[in-house]
Image 1: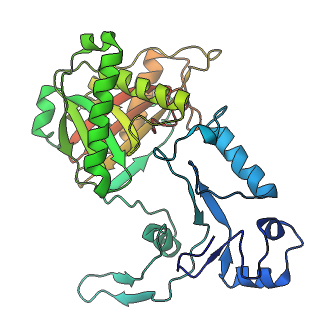
Image 2: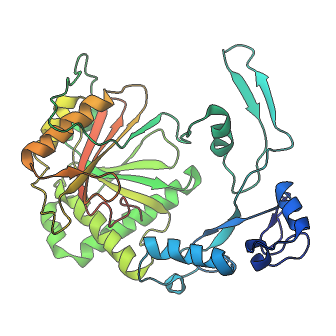
Length: 365
């Protein structure tokens, strides 16, 4: 494929005319090896979808097929409609931009990076090489995915607990919606609302859970919105999300293509360890047996904004609560059956207890 003006030729049509198989073989031509070292050609990675992915050969084709089957077992790419999810390829490495500059900030004690990147590249990937660690593109977000310390009573650090946002007083439940970019927010929101209405219409049992409508709350993070409903039961967002994810798994088509993640929130409370534990007391249930593969859990904590609580204290306290309710439960960061999620937005905590975490790919649509 042509390089699109970014100065890198994609594998499959190199500067010397070699095929993708030639480049994959150990007998690759010396001129292509030199071109690769000079950044003139590069390997590519797939954006799985319908059309536009190209056809790799040999070991590259086997690797991509194995990745697809690992995450989408028993489903063919041909089942995906191009209008829903179009495929493509992205160059696999990022050369240092020609206009890259570093200068000292004239006022703050820091430095300024200036550079231009081609389409499909991310500034955080480049800056990571200078900082030496992963950089979150969503400002002010902290992710904690840590196994709790078993049987340990944690100091909850509740001194000067921040006040929760006013809308938490109604005990709102709902969803955290993530989309690809801020530009997609309105369309993603409309797709999500339409999806929720359709799911309710398909299952009369959901009417017993209340929740006639959801209101939108902005988080201050680009591409992330909250849908909340004060009248819905805590079970409703989990039931709706599970139905949407089941539909996506069975059909290979997302019911809301612009929504990347649909994360249920089952309560809202002040961001303190005691308040979060009190909310979770009414949400947690005894985990299933090891034979059924339902004895594992993980805690996923995300904090955004300047008001935060002690991450380790909260995670350890949640671990103690799970152990008290299900003494046989075991933490598992890789293949957990259940996730206990806590989203914190400047003094407001939104916990949830989400089954099928591994099967639903972390509730990613």
